Length: 356
Image 1 (tube, rainbow, N blue to C red):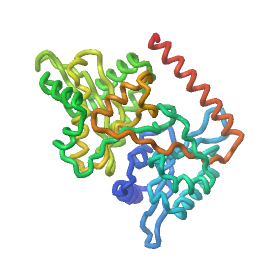
Image 2 (image 1 turned 30 degrees about the horizontal axis):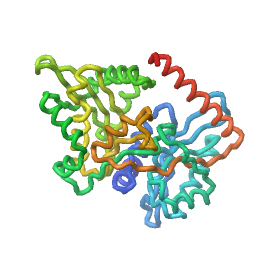
Image 3 (image 1 turned 90 degrees about the horizontal axis):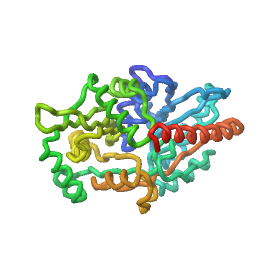
Image 4 (image 1 turned 180 degrees about the vertical axis):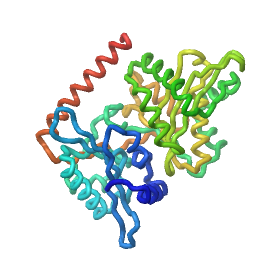
């Protein structure tokens, strides 16, 4: 189903109020992904009201005679309603025929111990992939989430690791200022992203992507910028983040920092301001997103990321993984092989660029 203005409003009303709301299932997110076609499976109850949805991104695979369908963090419905999930799956199958899809991938926002949901999905023909532990999936399988429900700022601060509270105070005492960025500030944030990518050895998106996020997500997106300096007359932007707030969840989408004034701890203060924004808007979950799955391994290259996020009283949550519904087995196997080669090449290029 294509989105009309009236349906958009109805869809948003349903998805933002549903306890399983997620910005990656918003109609706005489909606009961010402008290189993809966005279609929707919508199920209605006997009264004609929406009772289940699945936003699907569809993209032609280069050099393949088929497309790839992906539903990030969907569906939004009762995950234990087998009839509902069958209707959503049947709708997805119709789209697969229309677009000659090779497969549908769904990485549902539900924990790994949701065995009933896994049982239903397997019964409907999906296969489950859950053997990845760092950030190898399209979405991270292990997330760090802060429970905000019925919490005050004081209660949250008290629950933070003492070092995290200390670093927030350091930033405040050093005079770090957090400002809400505008569209004109995207280039400033992008420069920080380039610095971060070079320092940490990863490939960043182009600046147009961040413009699209800001433009398309609108009120659901906020750009936070941290400024620091020796005095107020010589402040410069040293850290930045983009957050997406939709329904009951706020997601930490992107973060970047410069190489100066790192000892002023701006990254801690900017996270605290995002959490405060989440509270102000009635969110029950603040999602710091990906962390390593094997947290005991201090030699893991992203262990520091885990420690930083854990300090905000986050709970490591293991998600269920990726469900694949395969329509063209031959092309699917060939695609998976090509993807594994592409990822290896990308990592090699990233290491070469960073000199590591």
